[in-house]
Image (spheres, rainbow, N blue to C red):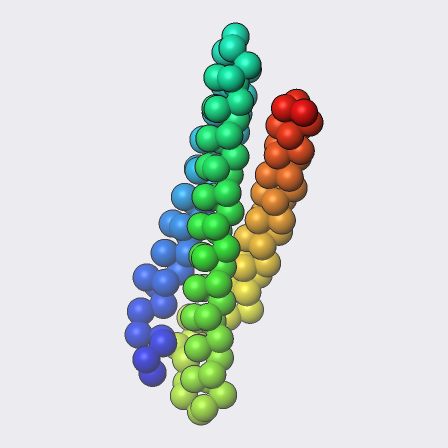
Amino acid sequence: MTYANNPQSVINGFYSSSRNVFLTLSIGVAMYGFSNSFNLGVSKNIIKDISLLIFLYSLMTGINNVVLFNNYIKGLEKEQLAGEELPLYLDLNGWKRYLYIKIYFLVLLICIIFAAFTRLYIRRF
């Protein structure tokens, strides 16, 4: 039972990483809105570029989080199929729902990135 040694740490890490994704996204949104307070167009564009990079960082962190957590769940399922008993408190279906919620959020983040990039691209040209 190698995968189920400390599932509480894994789920805590998933929640922590999810929180980091949400916080990083909110920093990017704040910077994007803050860029409108500049009078120079160059300054606006630089701050908006930085906010887009923060959006992308948030997206990459979220994708990495989803992939790692999904791999952990698959490892637990393999152990279960091999005949090893998992602790009763592990609700793999519940954990999968958290993955789906996170994936939905990442899809929304992709839409935000696309909209911000399109708006910035249209303004420049």
